[in-house]
Image 1 (cartoon, one colour):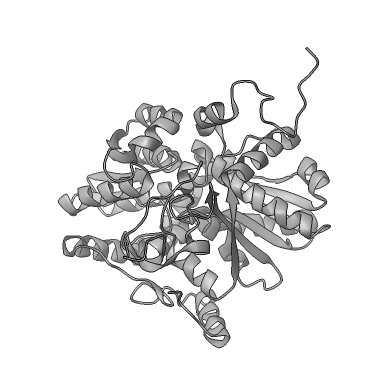
Image 2 (tube, rainbow, N blue to C red; image 1 turned 135 degrees about the vertical axis):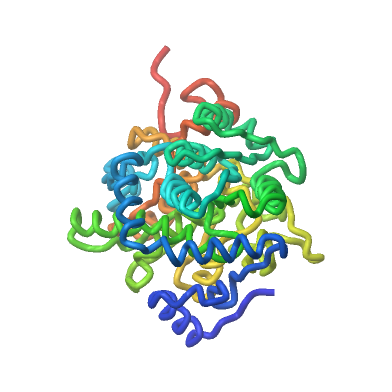
Length: 425
């Protein structure tokens, strides 16, 4: 079943969200969210919630985090006019360049903030999970920066398809633990990280990588990622004199998207579009389009939209992008979908690959496969709405995806690329 909300209920919930009253005291974003965790973890979650209230908006913590983001992580990231894509699509296209943040993606914003929080809370080690490897690399780097040991759980399938990031994590001092259970991708990695945390809730800090999980994680991650949207809103206004007509981001768990969208939620004329992984097609198990095809349920500590069968069993998912290969989504996204403030659509593997290659040729940028889904969705919208201004979250760079791209596209750089012509030979 779907969660049904009236127009009046939707407006009221959006007003509460914009007023800082969601999540509520129970960690709920309207019908979604909450804290569904093993009893052994409840004291640790209570300590985390207290720490979030004490430090997250404390001026001293905010100033220290801001300084580290600027001097170490490379913020603010640029806003790039995408002239080639603009010409091809018939729209005014801008890219928010999280690929230029330290470690190559938006993940460092959250990882650094949580690592600093873990240090203040007296954690002896940090546990993390990763799919595409970007959160793992960011966590490893952030833990090295603050001086705390780090263990990263990663599905065995993802270890193979994201091999460059596995090597980077090791170089940064993290212990990478392969997960052979379950579907051997992100969902299984999160399961194992939770098991580890249950075994040592006192000495360990679980540095969750997306806007999912039990309260207060969805709120905490969103607050640390809002820097993306705050910068982008200011930058595009300075450059163009106005706001974009549409803001587009890819959605797996949803951290980069919620970070980009949140500062625009009150701008009624700005269309917000989240692009999920359409994978191979609409069949259950062939995609990771949770909001497009899912139903409500509980996974990894919160009530949100999930991909599960008629018996309530969470299903395996598929995406060419490891970071979107997850059967759930953050509860704030579930709310924004239910009230109609954000439109969620899909891009298939093939559409994402095509958009990635077009970006390479038109802009000289190699985006992450995750970001390529946003590009595919933005292209579709822009071509239907010519002359509009479109802001796209380029959530990460594609270096990590070279093993996959080499395998799928082939070693000939012109093979399978409809946007480029091979020179005469």
